[in-house]
Image (cartoon, rainbow, N blue to C red; front, side, top):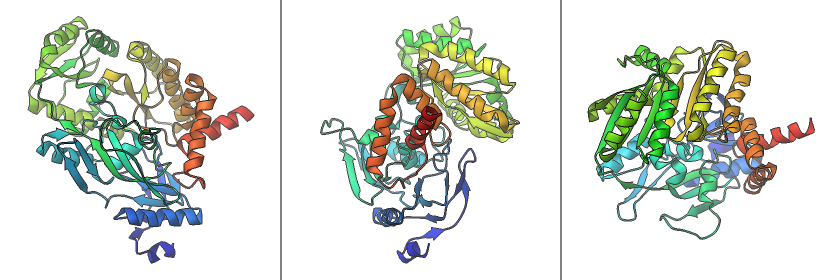
Length: 447
């Protein structure tokens, strides 16, 4: 790849893996420091018909950055906070900015960016936008899709566009901001992001920790909470297997509980009603100090890391079901554990129906079949095969099934048409996501 070196770009040759060990074996890794350098690389890839894959921090869980022989565009050096606007309430950043660092700087000014994926201390904001990541505050504030105002994007042709505007109300044209947000690097390379920010909450928040008798009871708590009109800032769940992993790997010192642990953060005026609901479902509840809450919150963020350290093989699932179907989803997950004789410890953003069964395997031979069965639970119950982890390689077939079942084949055809229009040579993170879902659908039709 002498030609890229001739362009004066920093390069290396190395293999990598993402968080769940999908292999990344690029032809070359390029480290751009500006949008102009990104344009040079993308144009080179376009002219030579070479696949190109953007890389943030490697916390992907679905093979979204896996490649063989690609140009891997490592965005780590484009990591500046360009502007914090405390009148128009936005922050403008480059994609390589670490999310935790960004929020620390915003909090110094009295603001914050609410979405908080569990990898917040590791991930880059560019990766979070590419995946439309969610997190523990998603029940109240949504995912990254809800907080992106505008983007600068280098298209697969090397052209640069800016989509959206850095203010809340904008009805000019199709909503291209949300087309690129969550596109998993298949439509272009994001070089600047305008995020909506809001002031830090002033309402006093109460942090609750409740040890539950079982997961069914936890689902009952969440349903009653919603019926009562309580909108928590956080409603998180970890089961007892996760507690054991945190105690073993991180010396967490948490009490084990057959039914797991429910974490809630609610406004002070909702406290008594929330305690009443927890009591109805036999939760053993305590109010935490801010310091203890921060400790538990940090442990929750590291739950998948603790599980992974204890497993020979781990598949991280990410399904969403309507909250009204949580009990049914939990029942069906238990049936799969019995059927396959495996453990599937559950981590959940349970307040919005987002479940993460972590499939612990001793034998990979059953992995794909079990993984698909978990996804089909979501499809059957009117939910989604992914709430925040994305599709990548791992969930393309399931995504195709979901779209065909819930929306129809035409919708998937429209998505494939968009990919072909924006990326006419098929070089931008190819062979994944919409492209792969469409291919697998066509193969199924021809069999």
